[in-house]
Length: 206
Image (cartoon, rainbow, N blue to C red):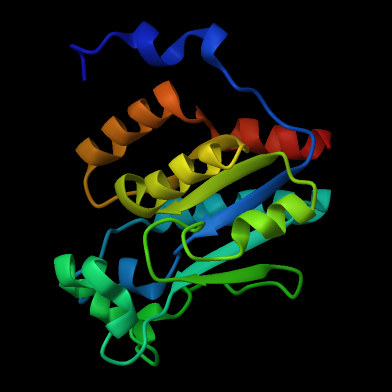
């Protein structure tokens, strides 16, 4: 990434800043990404630990928290071209333990769970209308994977009119190259990429 112009993404004039009524989204922290025997394994334990710390701060601040997962009909007939292209997604067919929450993560009673079939948490779900009804103006993203469902959700979040913020320490991918290049690109075009500490400081200030 040394050949990229750092001013393209990191100019202070291009920062979206924080909103007044944020919501936190934890994208697809499910067992498949943490089980070395699964084709989707990503080795992202530290990513989950960061997301859990951010969620604790969100709970303390009374900020809405949304968790997403992926569930397909047996046979994955509702997975469409996504499952045709990425066959390991079949591990998310209903009843497969790989679709369960990662160890250490359980939805709180106040957390909303959104089930999706495609990369974006917004596509084909009620998420946008729910956040709008709650008066949310900022979406904070954590989750897996940076180059896949996090990026898709980021673009849709911005497109729906939400200030979008990505917690750098709380998103992860299988490889560092797509992780870093997608963070760079999202920071340049769609969102602010900030540290876990900055996110928590913001939530505490609320």
